[in-house]
Amino acid sequence: MIAETVCSAVSAAGLGIAAITAYRKRFLAAARIAAYSLVPLGLVMTGAVQWAADTAFSPTAWAGFGVLGAAWLLFVGTRAVERRRGGRRDRKAASAEGRPDVVAPQASAPSLGQASRPAARPQRKSTADSADDFSDIEAILKKHGI
Image 1 (cartoon, helix red, strand yellow):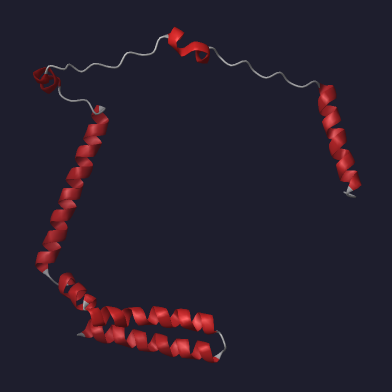
Image 2 (spheres, rainbow, N blue to C red; image 1 turned 180 degrees about the vertical axis):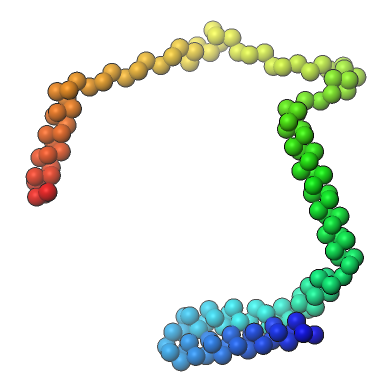
């Protein structure tokens, strides 16, 4: 009951502020304030506020949140252990299925082709070329009076 009263009061206050804003000829801002002000009133009218209040003060709901938290911790914990192991299965389980844990063979050098050779470093420009670059820049700057 109190939650509905508070939400209604907040909506009324927001609509009052929207009216003052509209009086100051700021219609777009007034419309936005009115939209925000109507949200709590709509939540009261749909019963969402009553549901939230009932949930917040329900020991059963809090126990349910605790169970959900424990499930989340189990999921996260098992995922962390799985990543730490490297995602490998137990050897006993793998041999029972008849498929041992085998690492994929690495690609041989001939199959890689040209990619196995290190790339050549690009040659540096001579100092004369770099001086020409700066002369071009100086000419542009002089043209613009800088």
